[in-house]
Image (cartoon, rainbow, N blue to C red; front, side):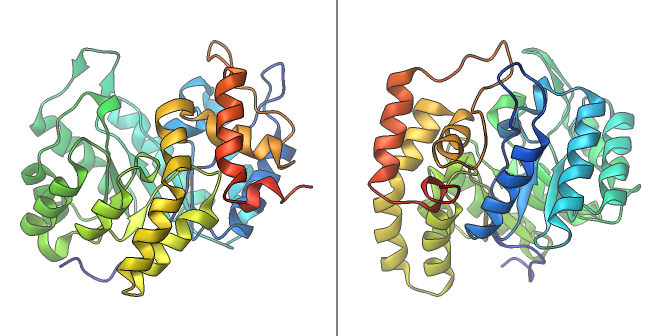
Length: 307
């Protein structure tokens, strides 16, 4: 069984609002964070892939991290994504995040493009070097986008032997089975086995031992219903909530991706624009309409918060 976790529950990813011409919209960003806290987020992750981190310049990352952490002002813990292929740059990003008040950093294994990868020994050393430079937990993000296979045996060894590696966001195919194997191999060294991928497999992952969920940012109130019921030992209630919210989770995961939270927040007056940054394409109007129709059947706070 995992050791008592410092962080657990629903920690959604915050989107990065832009103006229609692609500039950062810091006022909308602050409103986004306020909404996410009001909607029940037990923590927030920033600068992740669902934050469009891949279209941000380094100085924009720094500005966003500083702005958000100052605005949160300790209301909830904030996880800052600091992934870079370079160990040196990941370390620099992570040290800055810690200095700004981050509760944790989330890092993917080093990768670039479709083919540039490193082996298990280098992955282990990458995280070990990072751990030696910070004093806050590291969450390993295990996701298909990296193209790197992280075996449960490697992840468990990292948890046992690398001091700050304690949390694991598992969003690969067969996530529940991987979580079970990770917990079997890692035991008490696994402080935070977490679910990801917008919660599309959340109930199965909770059954497998997940204690945290890093979801999209649009409806933390809905995700809390599932996770809170499960944590209280009311699995049937959790299953009922999961089945009710699953159409919206599915629409986000399979149809809209990272633009779902922005569309919901724009519709509810949380942010001024739901535009992505070019060359990312905006949502097709029909896809957006389907998202909003599905959401309205659930009456999430996001559609009422700014109205």
